[in-house]
Amino acid sequence: MTLRGANWQGKIEFAEPAHAPNGVRGQIIDGTLAAAALLDGIPCRKGSQVAFFWGGQLMSCTLSQDTDITATLLKSDGTAQAPKLRCLANDTVRLDGLRFGELGGCRLAAPGEFGDMSCAAGERILISNGHVAACTFARPARLGPLDLPAGTAVTYYERRPSNFRLPAEIGPIAGFGLSLPAGTEAAFCYREDMPERLLVSRAAYVTVENLRLTGFIEFDCSADGRFNSGMLFEDAIIGGKWRQRGETFFRDDLRLGMGKSDSD
Image (cartoon, rainbow, N blue to C red; front, top):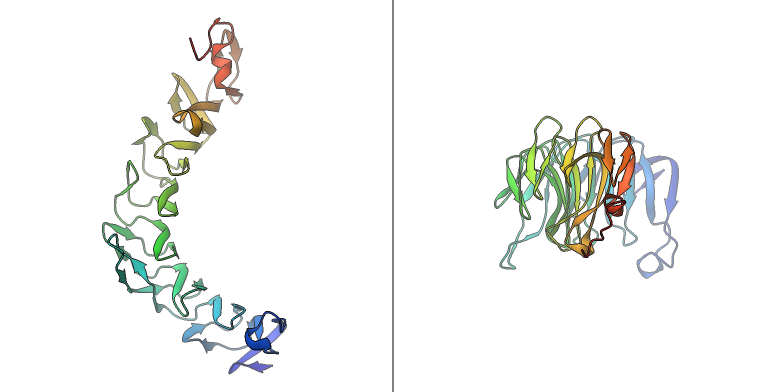
């Protein structure tokens, strides 16, 4: 079938007239290309699964070649810049639903430079509301209160630090008053520079409350980010009781048998 100047095969989906602009019928929203095609100026690969927004604009496809795509980014003073970012062939590109033809996300073919931050080639970048929402640092950079090495994958929510994952081959890194081993993943408390949770490799640990912890570790955002629960990296005595490696315990367990509470 030929639609929009492109050849399609397999299952094809169309927008309901109520969703299409002016009730247009026969507007494709999802299909597979039978041959490479240029859609809204984007070169899409043969066999690519292609999606369109209800308005008819291209949403996503697999690129047939490295492609420069414009992205609107807002500076700290509110002014806009529109750099072209090179996206990698044979990977999925997603376009912005509000800015026609502009980049929403792709895997970069060349580093992207954004002031003090450089996003690495070969890694995915996401852009939302004129700001970088996800990136892998090409060189050391700062995320909130932390200085993080190249290779760290980071995300932002409402322009605030949200999550990060340290590279597997670099560590330990100082952060949140802790020594974070290589590969550690972390989430920030909402709009705070405190940890909400850590995910540490079972082969490594962080020291919290003088105990070596591994795996999933939680902190209390409503109590200045203090430790809430975690898994033991090794056998330990907690609250007067013997606990085995791999057991999960809670902050209150530290007080058991001691005749004290957090308010003491």
